[in-house]
Image 1: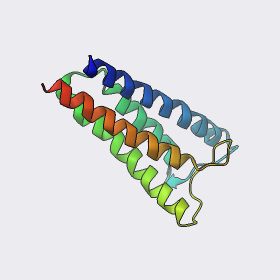
Image 2: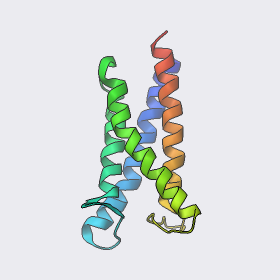
Image 3: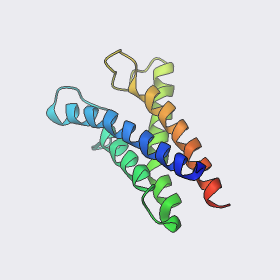
Image 4: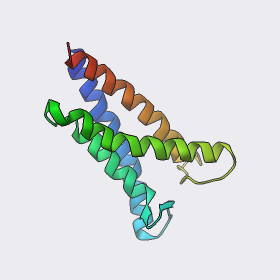
Length: 127
């Protein structure tokens, strides 16, 4: 039961992340609000793909679940950590929410919760 609950939580957190970053990616694509870029690639697109891969891991077979999750989670967490650090140091790098809070703060909280739920699910899966 805990295994299924943890998988539902992982899926829910990834869905929340997808909806949040989809709005930012849409605003970037329409030119209303740019998101930071990583070379030529907008960071919001990388985060969108990352949340999608991490979410898809819930439905993947056991053998590829962890690599698929890690492929999505690592860049999202890294960008959230880097963006949050830059915000704290006074270098505004992240798009703002409607409440004027840097969205990388939300993403950092979400990815931290996500890895916790994933490890709970993984530990109960191995029993």
